[in-house]
Length: 332
Image (cartoon, rainbow, N blue to C red; front, side, top):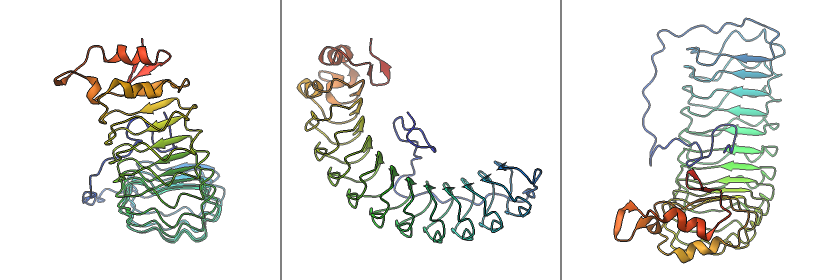
């Protein structure tokens, strides 16, 4: 299931796990780097993917280019782009950038991908007010800042950084997708203005309590796996949810979700459900198609924590006879 243009959300939303701290990256060898050479000056789409390019240069002849891809190269500095005012999409994914800079002239840019670099700060995006998508996955960013003027943003991707607090984004009321998975966030907050939000991913953080979702009335997908949540609550306003991911938390009960009648996918594996009566809480959800419950206590044969109960799938099917998929396998 795809949740953004960058990564597929199956179990981990496409995020690369980096633990508490991102590992130090050794500099790549640029001794055999090649010069950037433009072949078609009239091209609208220019792709220099994986070209061992170390420097952005020789692009002045591109007077019509709209999409420029420089992903997976050896680039250490954003430069040489000032003449490309027609650019709509710029992709610098997987390079060696340490600073966001020299983008002022790209006033028509709608999509910017700076993922998998070495950026420690969000900065110098002042003129990019037409941005709709901003990708900053897997950098070294510690604070959400300097994006509050990007009011046309529809997608903001900050997964796999070092962010501790959701802040400085309340003005981004056009957001439909917000991804801040794999960070160090302890609290869901500053979300009240996101009435247009459809997808929220906060996987692999340090959240212990569900809350702050009262205004997310149009939320469709909510991903909160790999946290420390102990009680299923706070979803009263999220009546349009079709996907709810609470896998790998500390939940002992399935409760307070009978009103989520649009729910189709319920991911609840690796929690602490030890009674089949809890599964009966899903009976009102007649649109439910997929349920993940493996590796809860009910998944195992009584007294044998390492052996799956051979009747596990049958019990789920008896309780939810309309279900189409149990864990990763189609229901028979």
